[in-house]
Length: 151
Image (cartoon, rainbow, N blue to C red):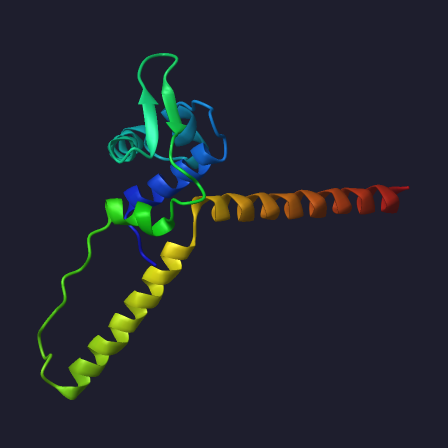
């Protein structure tokens, strides 16, 4: 799925902020971690603040805090803030081929929308933590094998 850069920044930021509840995180920290422009990230965070997903505090001790509900906020909710629905192209709609293509594309849109509505921010956080734990476990096992082989 192709998403605008701002949409990806929003998803990354929300997941990061929601995984650290109650913590105020500087935009500069988020920008550095994800190697993104702080200027562009600031625009994204303003949109998220207006949508009451994050709260933002200015100043040297400022930062952003997730104030949404990670169990209820979905990818669809975030994407809808940054992506526009493409208008339907009515050209050739009166032909059987165009009608069938429109039907298939409509079904793809419905399936995609249902999937995006089913994936919450908490789901992403949980999956990322499991993946991190697996990676750490695999790394520890590799380190043990190397120590055993060396001894």
